[in-house]
Amino acid sequence: MSKDRQVKSFSGDYEKIYNAIIDDMTEELESLDDDNLAHTNKSLLEFPVGGDITHHTKSYLKALLKLQIQLVRLQDWVKATGYKLVIIFEGRDAAGKGGVIKRITQKLNPRICKVVALSAPSEREKTQWYFQRYISHLPAAGEIVMFDRSWYNRAGVEKVMGFCTEKEYQEFINTVPEFERMICQSGIHLIKYWFSISDKEQEFRFNCRINDPLKQWKLSPMDLQSRIRWEDYTKAKEVMLEKTHISEAPWHIVPAIDKKLARLNCIAHLLSQIPYKEIKTKKVKLPQRKRDEHYRRNPTPKELIIPQVYL
Image 1 (cartoon, rainbow, N blue to C red):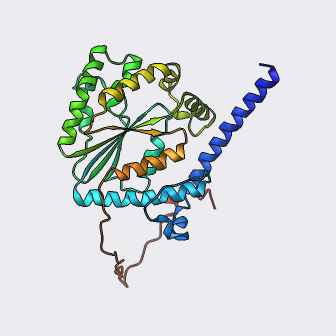
Image 2: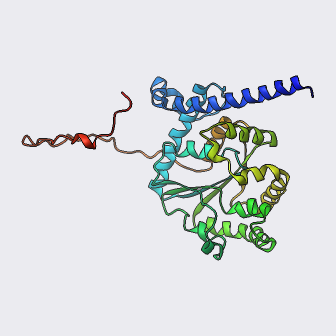
Image 3: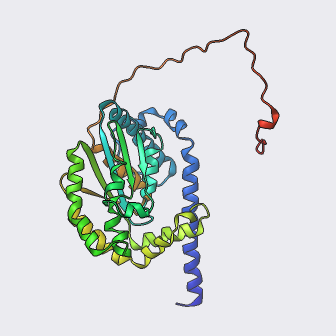
């Protein structure tokens, strides 16, 4: 390749990365206006959802808002019925798991919908039964728990990077179906998602993180190793899906090269898996505050007030 063509190719890649960063930032700013979207056209907010979604941010946000309204209804139903729900999000690094989790939880009550993202096991945890540290996070009645990576770490990163022995890996692969059957038999609904992206798309997203100061923290040394060992991770994933796809808790593959469509389709699928209904609630009436004619509010000491940097 000539030097001119190399420069042109690099320039094109840089422009694509730059546009992706700007798109992410624009999306976050636009999402602040979702309350206005709700008042603009209330007919847009009713189920069913689906169909063509343009890549215009407003169209995407309107579709997302519809789904988030249904998620709130799901949350109310879970609380009212004592339903217990666990959702596992797995996939390669930069596949978009965190993005969809963020959109699911954005409008929900964190006391009902909880996210579990465990760090590497401590020395004590390494001596425990492998599933032990995950069990304590399973939901009680009326709770939703989402695992941002889960016990399937053993079938992926631990297997590929040699963080577990072959015996430990084989024991996991052989026992996890029974473990998940026990979870389901206890009354917990377990849903498992695998976010699927291409080699090229992961490379692009890693380059976005390298060039985006707001996302550089997401790029870890382990992420870099995952690029080197792409094929090893592919083999491990294929075995995992084959051995742990059970009728009680099947795997669901989310095509995730387009992040926005992946979020919408995953949330729509999640809602379709649960027999929730809208819970009718009494209309809340704001009570009048009590007033004491003798009460006088004391002035706030000026030294307690933070500097007004923005005016």
